Structures are given as structure tokens and as C-alpha cells.
Length: 518
Image (tube, rainbow, N blue to C red; front, top):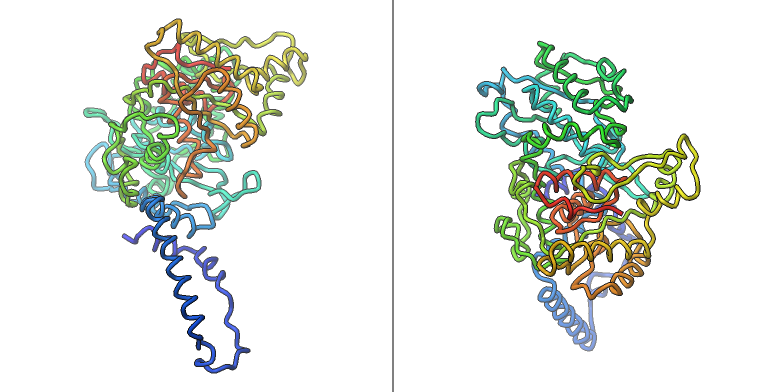
């Protein structure tokens, strides 16, 4: 296999590196001897400069460390975001992509491909749909056909977001591990392993294509229809089809839409979802675990006992092969919490207008943020909606969705008091991590305000993370892992990113009183 560096250099963007070389001048007609002759004084001066440069380089190596220099070297080589070529190649060569395998795989396999999966949305929206689609495939004993985390289907390589280049498609194996992305199911489970959409298209050139409207037409927007009923209708529909190759039409609406996830209706699926190996064996990718390990010192001195040796921060950067594995290194539900860590999910930027929009339409929290066991509740006002609301309602929404520094401090103080009441001094909160897209100056003001509450051991934010070239585009997943492992989370009830974290915390049996909302 080509090395990571040689793979990058071989791609079509390598020409950008070549173009940085200045053209040679043909106007200099001096002889080689005259061009390179130096006086004795110049020679001594040049020698001195070389010695100083060597000293500075040696000092930098000692203070930075070989692994950090290696990472800096990678960053300097790449002016463009990663395209994850080796991850894509790894997914193409999963062992289940083999027609000679025995039942239930090989020529006996049946497949479910949701070609209409969400695109152009953040990882929170993509993940919640991904989990449900994979659970449906497992329930019907069909191989789940996975695709990339997709921002733009038809772009060649890159898209733009907030004026910056981002990868148009990121392979799921860069973000997650587990059965969704092709690891084995538990023993005696008869479902075939997940396969890539490339393999599906190869072995199923003429699949049965169905429209989500066939099942969802009268169910999708009916608030009296729980998610479980929609799920069971789809199980019945897929089990009725004899064709082993089933595809949902790409132009169709999603099977499980944001209106379903954004209401209590989704909670009806929890008894099935919580027991499905799709969620029970869900894990973060080696890349995400590595990024967590590299940054954990910012907010906790916690051990890394659940990481293999090659992923502990004291070791060298892992070679590419160690980052390509769909088998769970540690399942999300088996992770212990980081004692003393409080994580705050604080959205800024575009969320200001988004929260006002939610107020105008009397929106509710995301469904997985409304488990009855969770202590914080949100009641949708009855005197607004359909595009307009009262000033009082807007202020209520902003407090829960886009809190000010004063409101954040007030909530942290309340949570500290509740923790003392529940655990006395046994589980004191000592550090804060802030999941955020807020600007640096505002975060500095927030840190100062939080330090007035108590003397925290550390306060770190998403802006403080040192991420590798490949980890930067999937930084939201790193935030999610930190929030998932926190002793206490204060999340945004309107956020799908928060609701996915809550889903994982509930799956891991973290005490519900330790999951809070603004």
C-alpha cells in the first residue's frame, strides 16, 4: 500500500505544490564561478548563520517533540482539506465485499440502500438518521448500505461552508466504528454486515427502487403517529419484498425526517433502538479517539486505560493502518465518565437567527432531549406559532437556545448546587469544556465570568483543541465524545448534536440527573 504522504502527492492537487516554485531566470549571464565566489568574511558570517539555524531547529525539536513536528510537517504540506483517500480505499476492501462468503453474506445477502439519506446538513442531523436507517436494515436482516457523510453529492471534491473549503464527502470510517460501518454483529445474529454503496451498485445493478411516500404519506406529519409505528411499517414493507436488492429513490423524502426527530414521537422507538447492536455496539473511529487522547490534558488528567497503546498521547503518531478499522476499539456504552468534568454545549453564530425562527414557529426540543427521566423540561408556549410569537416567548426561547453569559453562569451555579445536593462532595465538578462555535473574544469573556463562580482547575473550549489535518473536518465528533464522557452535560435542547450525545449517554446508563439543558 502506498504511504500516506505518497498517496497525497499522487492526487490531482499535487500540482498546487509544484506551482509554488518560482520560474528560473535566463537573464543572468555571469559565470558559475563569479556567482558563487565568497569572501572570507562572508564565509564566516554564513557559517555562523547556519550554526544558529541548527541550534534553533534542535531547540524546537526538543520542546515540540517528534510527534508534534510530524503533525506540523503534515499540516505544512497540505493547503487543502483532506480527501481521506486511504479511508475510502479501506472501505472498498472490507472482507464482506466477497460473493463467495457463506450465508447470510455472499450470494445469499440481502441489502437495504437509503439513497435518499440526508445531505447538506451537519453531522448531528446526519447521525440521527444514519442510526435509524441502520437499525431498520438490521431489523429486516438486510445488509445496511452505508455512504459518506455528504455535504454535496455532485461536487467533485470540495464544497464551501462559511467561506471556507470543506470536503464534499467524508468516509464514515473517519468518524465512527461499529456495525453501521461494517463490523461484525454479535454471535448468533443472522444479519449480514454492512457494505459500501460502491459494492452494492456493483452486485445490484438493477435493484427494486421504492419511494418513501409509499409508506410515509399519511404518517410523516401526524403527531399522533409514533416513530415506532413508522418503523414497523417499513419493516413490514421490506420483509414483503423478495428482491434481495432494495433501494430508496434518491429524490424521495427521508424515511425518518427532522419533524420526527424534533418531537417526542421518536422516543417510542427507544426500547428497540437501545437494544439494537447498531447502537449497543456503536463506537467512535480511531481517528476521533486519537484526537480526544491528544487533547484530554486540556480539561482532565483522566487516564487513557481504555485506549490501546498506540493511541496514548505519549506515543508516536499512529501509522495510517492503525487509523483504519471498523471494529470498535471501545464501545460508546462501555466508556466510563470523566469524573469532575462539566461540558457546556453553547451554539453561537447562525444560531441567533435560528433560535428566533424556532420561537416564531413554537418548536419543541429534539425528541431524545425529552426523556422523562431527564430533570430539565421545556414546555412549548400555546400563544404563538405559524411564523409569529410574543416578545416574552422569544426571550424564553433565546434563554434555552442562545443564552447570554449571565444566563450561562446562572445555570452553571444551579447545576453546581444540584450536584452538591445529590452527591455532596463525592463528585465535585472541577473542570469545564465548552463545545462551541463562538468567537475567541466572546469565549474569553465567558471564561472570566465562569472563573468568578469558582476556581476551576481548567476551562477549555473547542477553539483550544489541537487537531490533526484529518481530524479538523470531523471536529464535531471529537466534541461529541467529550460531551458523552463528561460527568455532567449542559446541552442545547434544540440541537441534534446534543440529542445524539444524550442518546449515547442514556445508552451508557449515565445517571439522567447528570444530563441537563439550558
